[in-house]
Length: 445
View (cartoon, rainbow, N blue to C red):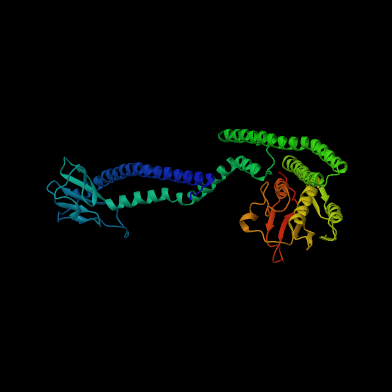
């Protein structure tokens, strides 16, 4: 199974990682440069220290009254010496040293210039015709510690900068992709019958070809559906007149003939023509359900419409309907004509396919839930899922067009409602039930 990743998440993560990596490389480069510069500063400090101490050391040595060996420079107070020094003659005899100097750090004989040992950096300077030498030593650990502290000082600001940059990058990406989200919502929230072009202002240039392609696809679908609906509606409409004419002629033939056999066959033909006429009417309803808008511009009370439809079928099938209506009004944006077609098809389907000796229950709740249930055989689950399709019936022995529930499904889908089919019906051990919530929520799409 392929895992889909968010474009915003991907861009935010990789841009943050990229910025952080660039910062780290910048810090490393800055550390290398700082190390070079700091070594130059430390070397300059060694050289400056040697040149400043050397005259005082020479004066002190020359003014001694007696030469009794090396002397240690006195300190005003105890402190850590990062720079230590020795004053020796050309043969290496120690004449003067700083109070914390370790002679073993220095070489056997003094040398001029910079030299390195495994632990120290040493600078030597000569005086009085190279008879006296001063050597100043600095521990390499001191330099490493200073460079490490400087690098850490450069790295420390990155700790809060990483989450700040992540938030900043995500905010910029989210703001930049705002119109893309608007495009997505514009497509997702529109009804199934809305094939009008998608229009989003200030869409990023990279997504404009996508919107153009989507609009072209919608236009092709709209033309194809219009062609199909037009053909269905025109065909059904054109059939009405010849069917009515044929029925009239057939009925006249039945009244004029005295042959019982002819009358029987004419009756069978008349029943077939009536079925064909009903199919024509259903095709017209299907074309209207799929082609016209199922929503109106204002709320409508659907309770009296359901009452009127139930009264019509009560005259056709006395005693078979049980109607339950709420005491209050049920307001909905569903078009009254579309609701009438929906209710008629549900009731007709329940009467036609239910047990003739048991009632059909019709109920409408105050929250707008319409239920129509009959009694009869249980519809298998595999057939139940297919009843929404055109020309599908649960019982092929029962007369019917097989598109009643397809019309209801088209109206419900166009209005953003859901048609639920159950067998057995709720609260029964058998039968069939159709349920749909006819209250359409207001949207600002």
